[in-house]
Length: 516
Ligand code: BES
Ligand code: MN
Ligand code: ZN
Image (cartoon, rainbow, N blue to C red):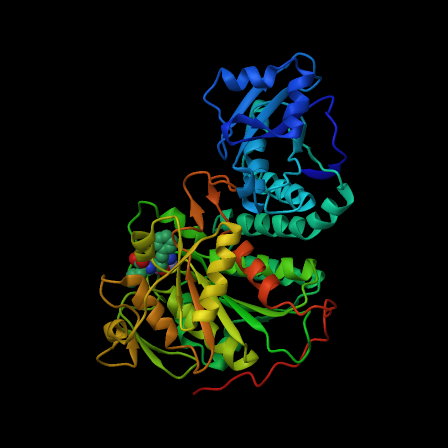
């Protein structure tokens, strides 16, 4: 889908979306359309339940007096509440209605609203973002899609008084939209296609965007003592990998921010095998890694003025004659030993070594991990919030705020020594599961044991939000890409140093190995 910005004016063809405020107050474009159609807009509103409430839509097909195929009225709610999110849902809602037709063009007219929270060019750019995100499809494996089921929209034109300014505002958002699609593609791919080596190769391809990518294979990880991560992959015929992606766009002397993603390309549960029902969903167990990789691609493509390292642990969790057994004891890179009570609690085993390696190697100023870690977080928070676990109030605050801004909400969960008690082992330093109670918290306590003193850390349990069974305001059902926009926004707001936009020479990483 192509996005263009143009001067205001009524289009001669395609679909035209205009905004209507609460209580049916017409925006300037809606008024123009009403006049051009001899009052069709006012009459349509009067004859329907549409009142301009946020996200309501009303569709006027083949109106007389205008060349367009349909006029789409989109509710904007109260003018002083119109912000970036509202502009995005304007674009997204218009797109959904436009897709009911067979046209190839959609024009979005989100007028300058004096009371709006955002400038006109930004509103225009965010409307384009909403349409772009909502228009995502994963049709790769549909060979029999009927013509009438195929999307026909080719161009979205956003009209705005200053198209050049809107285009400038759109450039970084375009990169973000592309990044979200990239993450969604990775998450949607089945595990026979996107196995660890295939994922590794895609991550490696970020080199052409200027990301430096280093790949550690099983041999390299064994040398570093990553018994925890390797134990998870040992039952699979697939080689496991740790992929390290670095973008150094910031001040060369600044310590990086690290993002660590769980990349379990398929999670059968291993010997502690999962029930068959719904197991196919475990192809999404690499969502944390997908989000991390997409984030790195975005930062590089928009030449972010920040130093960021993305680390992903890529494994497949399979039962087999070589698989690890419940009761096995593994030694992690940190030197700490783990009794593997349940082989299905594998994400934390992967992250234990990935987190340790990241801190040892890069001495980051903050570490954020993303993982589809527990079913328990889905029980606690449903599909509406991701769980946030952290040892740092400031990091929690800036992550939560960024999430609010982009519509990827986080809910902070408690941590504490009492929970940590649950993962004491009789024969090793810890075991990999507690009881059923507070399962997402004991998982976080486990990760915390691999965070070095003084390191600000946040863990996002995205098990309930990575995949959506229902369409969301700016996502069709399926892979949401939750976390990409949040982290991109958080880094843009808090870690980008003005005037350091050129990627710096890659710094030599600090000493690599190091058992405690
Ligand atoms: N990948 C799963 C968690 C998950 C569940 C992700 C639902 C997405 C949707 C994770 O590896 C897992 O199996 N966790 C177990 C932990 C248990 C054995 C302590 C779980 O949540 O049941
Ligand atoms: Mn599991
Ligand atoms: Zn898992």
